[in-house]
Amino acid sequence: MLVDSHCHLDFPDFAEERADIVARALAAGVERMVTISTRVKQFPTILEIAETYDPVYCSVGTHPHNAGEEGDVTADQLVKLAEHPKVVAIGEAGLDYFYDKAPRDAQARSFRAHIDAARRTGLPLVIHSRDADDDMAAILEEESGKGAFPFILHCFSSGRALAEAGVKLGGYVSFSGILTFKKSEELREIAADLPLDRLLVETDSPYLAPVPFRGKRNEPAYVAHTAKVLAETLGMSGDEIARITTDNFFRLFKKMPRPTPQGS
Image (cartoon, rainbow, N blue to C red):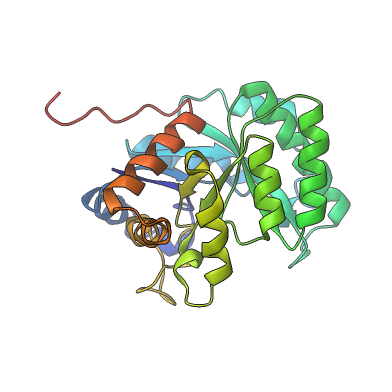
């Protein structure tokens, strides 16, 4: 069994064949998927998808790209929306200094509101961080001092220092198809040095399809290819890494029910 801890099934890329995409994921052994919110104002669409497909759950939150337009989203709102049984995470939220689509102060304010919601609900905060390692580490350190909160550094492609800082604070690190790219040697070295009990895999689909699908539209079924490369990086079998990352997922995403084993 595998889990895709981060996908975007609400994106237009999937609109015409969503049922087939979920079916292909299940056929590939991906028994749970989390479709991630990027705009709170579009949360009803996300929730409808999660309610339509049993293996699909969702988060609620505002992507840092959208922090300027959704600067009025409060922790109270997030906590309230997260009461739904299909909502298993907060986010994605964080800092993106690569595109800088929202003012950096707005990104930081939004990020802290999401941290507050994660702390209050106990749901994991899905963190987006790009070209913002120092500020991200500083905010995580400061906010953790106010009270621990569960979190995941999603689609990790940052430096070693941020990965180590996140793990030190109790966080998890999730790897996407980027891990499979030829030039990602440094990223694979970081993955090899992290504690096994903090590793997750994801697609971030429809983006970042792993080798051998690089350059094509990604989908949850392809998380198996990222898991395969992670297993090779760690000198493990595919079954071992599937078990480890799945166990890690359910430890972090505590609200998500495990599938009932067939035949039980």
